[in-house]
Figure 1 (spheres, helix red, strand yellow):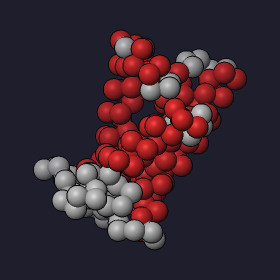
Figure 2 (spheres, helix red, strand yellow):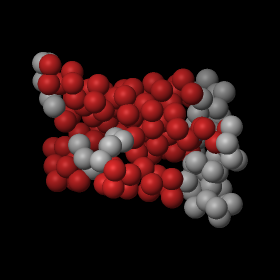
Figure 3 (cartoon, rainbow, N blue to C red):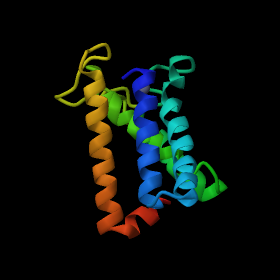
Figure 4 (cartoon, rainbow, N blue to C red):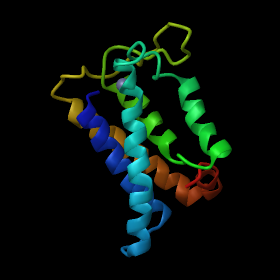
Length: 155
Ligand SMILES: [Zn+2]
């Protein structure tokens, strides 16, 4: 998926998560939206740094990197929501390109899904919208039915 779609997905996901974490239309909701949307967008931009440093879709597009972003806030106490942006970047890349990701890097094999569209496809925007909708629906279910999971994720 291209950078624009990653940013739009992360912005909508972060804002939606902020609303789910602090439902309402007041200053508390606005604060939660900003608190989540900014790190989620930054996390969504991070994996493609490997276009300049490393091998694209391998060096920073893998589960060990996601694990680092999950562990970082536990150890250092910041960057709490960045992992969400990294994770949604991987989902969009799996569905928004024909090529796979080296999820177990440094093991070089690239994993892909049997469905997906090309980066330049006219359907890329539709896929981005659908992925965002499914992610927000899943998050809404977690907040409603398993709030302990949301708390575990730091939300
Ligand atoms: Zn990518």
